Image (cartoon, one colour):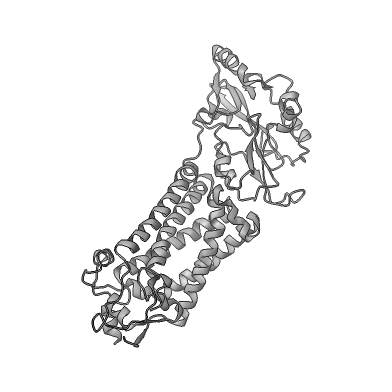
Length: 270
Length: 200
């Protein structure tokens, strides 16, 4: 997993560059918005980006540097939302990975993510065509070859570093001693952990990260409820047919009416 | 037995209802594939998930157009006040010996069904459009669109189960209104006594 010690980040953006280099992602034109922050946003070919937040603290300028990237949740909103089996998988390393070969471009994951991470772009016509979703893979390919992710490998100040889950307890205990807040996505149990000097929102992180309520209702509650309700409804109708029976017209002229009607089970042609 | 037949539906009503029904079936099959991973195999019927999605979008257009046309055809009939009540209509289905309520062309249940159908169809069309073209509403609202499309689908399936049952085996003699456009005099007398008296 990755730890991001924000006290050590100098916003050199080496992680952005290393990520692009390893993943062969093309550059995005920069945009001047009165800040060093660039490229403008995550995109299908920008998996990570340092956020610059300039805050006036009693006449003193504070600069908060936060990294916008996939947090690789143990309980991942994108995986919940995705309708295609195998299009988003969790690798042994804990990485949540989109398989663009299977992705159908529905963009459900884009809106299921609590951290606003997956991106798609219609202009991405190279390789897989169009409309595919992209995001950080936690370099699961590098990890598979026994290497750490490109971003942690390149970080010159060790603000970003790669570590085992087992060592996390010691790291967070030490951070708390220094007065830092540990941000691990709460119920989402992210595989990317931030050590924060200030409130999460200063770093562009949601204060209370959670699967979006509508996504949870849609994928976790409604999906089984719908199937159960429909089956129960059909069983109810069959029960009605068997016990109460269909609503037949009253036979005229008494019981002897020679009605040539076939059995009602054959579509009710009367 | 009587050979008297009563005209129940016009050719136009039948045509759009058939378009409607076929589009609905296509929508259900293509949509179920994305509803849950356990139904994903259904996308194979239409040549994979990518094709399935494209067909779902365009079948949705056909469906909403046909549904709105049917709504306009029947708007007057489903808005007309009736002498029967929903309770009496349901009671008759639950107890065949109950006295038939004085239903007009459409009984209270059918009128309700007409409104439920158009409301659900519009809900599905609007939320479906938002899913087809995301990034227009903002994240929060867009997330609710998926939920509402899902909720609308579940309600629609409940509606269609009852509708299909009552339109075929639940009320024998109804289906021919979809095929031939006529019903028997006995059927009319039993199910729509007031309408039958008016038509006679």
